[in-house]
Every structure is written in C-alpha cells, then in structure tokens.
Figure (spheres, rainbow, N blue to C red):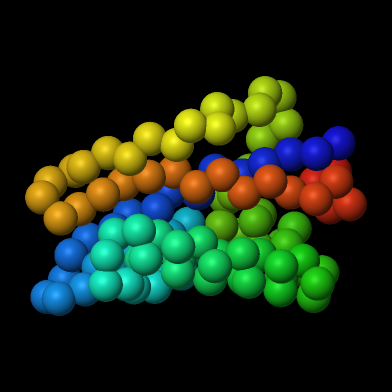
Length: 104
C-alpha cells in the first residue's frame, strides 16, 4: 500500500537571504528568494529521506520523530502558502512514499 507524509516547511527572511526549515526532520536550507529556499529545502529533505531508506533506518527515524505515514486519503495536489508575517511563509510539503516501503 502506498502512503505519504506531510512535512511543514517554514521560510523566514534573515538579513539578505531566506532560511527554510523542516522542524520535523531537523533540516535547514536557504536561498536568495522564498521559492529558491523552498526548492533547496525540498531537495535536502528528498536526499535525507532517500538516504535513511537506503540505510534501512526510515522506520526507526519516523518512529523517533513521531512521523506518521498517511494511507487513507490522498491529499490535495494544491499546496497553500500562508504568510505568517512579512517575509515569513509556511507551506506544507507532501512526500509520497514508494510502495516498497510505505507498508512498513
């Protein structure tokens, strides 16, 4: 059975660049624009998730961090950005799991 995980991405302006955070995974990136910071964070999250899967650590890491795999309904493909305050954006990131490891 396939599943997905929804991560929360937060982008904040700091000096001349934008810092992006995924607190659930403890991953941080940056960029010169909001879109670049989000894109860089997405790439970093993908690398991390692929690495822990290849090492056979995904299940342990998800359990320790309290991350749950969603299986019931597929999320909307439309992702909403919410401006929390000027120069700060919150957006969810949906990561679809490969069927080979979504069942565990």
